[in-house]
Amino acid sequence: MRVRFAGLELRNPVIAASGTFGYGVEFEDVVSLDRIGGLVTKGLSREPMDGNPAPRIIETASGMLNAIGLQNVGAEAFLDKKLPPLRKYPGCAVVANVFGYQVEDYVAVIEALNRADGIAAYEVNASCPNTTHGGQVFGTDMVQLATLVYAAKQAALRRAKPRPVLVKLSPNVTSIAEMALVAERAGADALSLVNTFLAMAIDAKTRRPRIANVTAGLSGPAIKPIALRMVYEASRAVKIPVIGLGGIVTAEDAVEFLLAGAAAVQVGTASYADPRAVERLAKGLEQWCAKHGVDKVASLTGALEIPLPK
Image (cartoon, rainbow, N blue to C red; front, top):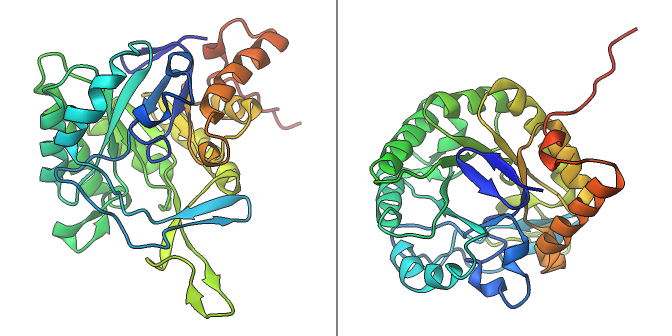
């Protein structure tokens, strides 16, 4: 069940996704962290953030809308309070998700995290609005994405033992393959895709938005077919590994993402319905491989068979 990519080695390819698993320590009494491949922390910023006003999360048909607003304790509090307990689980790769509203913010967070042990990699959230350039999302503009990824990679390289940089791409683009190439050329070691899709919900009776922020990110099974297609397109466009996420609930869902080209998968919204989803999926994937005669789970990556036209 072990997989290797971007300098990382995971006991299995199932990772808890950012924003759905707290900082990891909140789940240690519910999930056996030594049975999953890894976890991605909530997004970390330079300073603590309260996030958006409520209501900021609602259930939708086959999914969920959220506009949490990247609420977090800040990089320093994470290092002081959240990271130390995770060192009890050396086999669970801790990936720190970082974000900001200017390139300098990302760099400052990575430099702060560089000081600590116990972090396996960084995941750069490229779906944040760049306040320096009028609020345009980093991940939807090629130049801004390249600038961000390059700066984040250089910051990571300033550590004595550099950590790999994963880039979490926005799906709200015309061509995910083009954006994947931009991130690769700027220095990304791997890609995480996809993030949530921009969406909204309206209460017909009150004629008001159901989310205080008006728009929000759609996740869950509703987005799986689109996420799967994007993983397939991105993995064929780049040489670096791709981590797939978007609506994964069952072991077979995970297998589909691996076949489409993913080296590993992240489980997010499923943890809201079942807090033990990530551990259940790790076990389920192992059972699926045994049942179907798959000796090495890594052999599934990119093994999609497309019939030739007659």
